[in-house]
Length: 164
Image 1 (cartoon, rainbow, N blue to C red):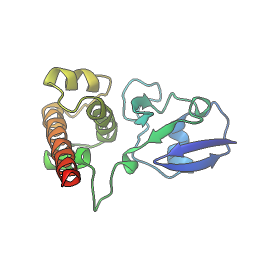
Image 2 (tube, rainbow, N blue to C red):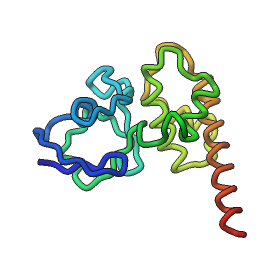
Image 3 (cartoon, rainbow, N blue to C red):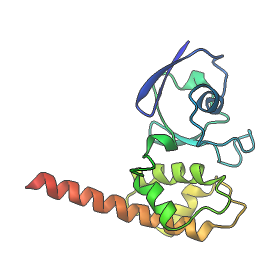
Image 4 (tube, rainbow, N blue to C red):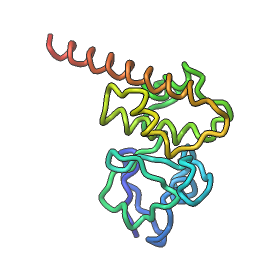
């Protein structure tokens, strides 16, 4: 039995410790944003955030996650209240087929948590492990910049609201 903290909630998981996180997310927890792409950690469609860092969930065994915080795309926002990264990807129409987009958003979210004003080169470097065959790279790049701006505005309004 492993206790897995996903999107702020504890889940008791009965699975082999070698089971990849992706299988537990999709099959046990019904969190289907992370996709099974290659199963080898080469495409990035399964990317989630673990303790603030992007992780390929298809090759990350449960045994490495005890006591760590796992965040999936479902943990960022909702349809009614999307997170800045989700809103930006929608506004920029960054998805074509959409298969890679959850992984791209999670990798971009991890970048923006560490660097609120990334350059094009830093965004490209951060997203490089994730593959997109549809060619929406320029829209994805614009979406990450838009998300950064949305996050900066949200931080500024929070700071202003707290200073009054």
